[in-house]
Length: 342
Image 1 (cartoon, one colour):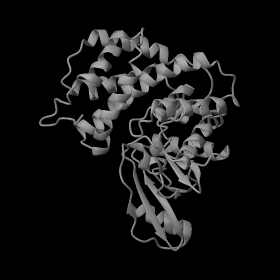
Image 2 (cartoon, helix red, strand yellow; image 1 turned 60 degrees about the vertical axis):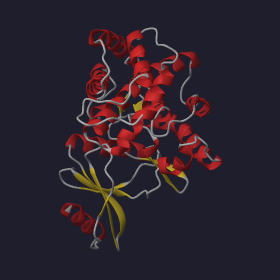
Image 3 (cartoon, one colour; image 1 turned 45 degrees about the vertical axis):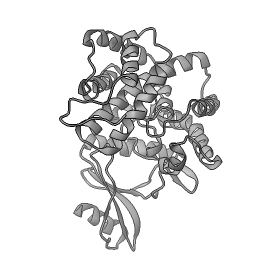
Image 4 (cartoon, rainbow, N blue to C red; image 1 turned 30 degrees about the vertical axis):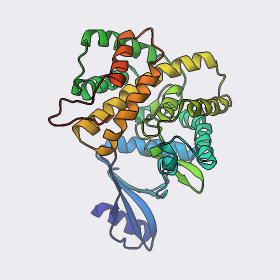
């Protein structure tokens, strides 16, 4: 904390008031709003040098290409702390919140969603163009190892904590096929990794991007799945279809699109992303007992049930398992005295 206050004074020539600790989410990074006569900034203290360096490099790539990410004004000598632009408090998620439960969004809210979908291809192609993938954290691309981590996240941090019995060998057979299928992509496009409404700020009616430090080279479909199938917003199927069309129209400005092939891969990648999300909700919710993540379990299972209502022929056991979780699991867990309200 003291180092952020010192950085503020060195940057502005003014003393800062008492910093405001911003709410924690899934990250161990600590954020503070630091204000004084020299203006207001967001201070970040990281826990991983590689992660901080990834953020700073990707942020510079966003800004070089005219995409609104927070400007970084000061970085500590060891790169473990920095001061960045304060984008305000209006997350896209909070802007949408009044319409989320009923799935009834105003025209202004829909316009923000359409704007975001139209900007996504620009993020993927412009940030990816000339990107030094070696700076990415924890790895340079969406590869076999990264997909294996996500599939095991689901198995060990969610599935094994439920009371549901399953055949681990049959599940692994499907995982092996899914991993091979999902890493078959080409191109030098940026995968934001956690492209969702909580990581987009609205400032002066413009989407601004944050928390992209886990970005890497990856398939276009991943970010689309992250946004449209996110349990926190749980968009209706008709709205998802409309926003998919917005994305595809914008994507055509950057590359030729074989829509049938794109949609086939999109459905497969959506499956991978939902498994990763369930792993996160299991660890952050069931283990760490963070209510934000516990609340996402029920809508995430609803998304999974909807996705596998059309079975995946190459992953029959995983399809059946997700259908059972969505339809049969009663919320019981192996965590002492803890049951999820479904």
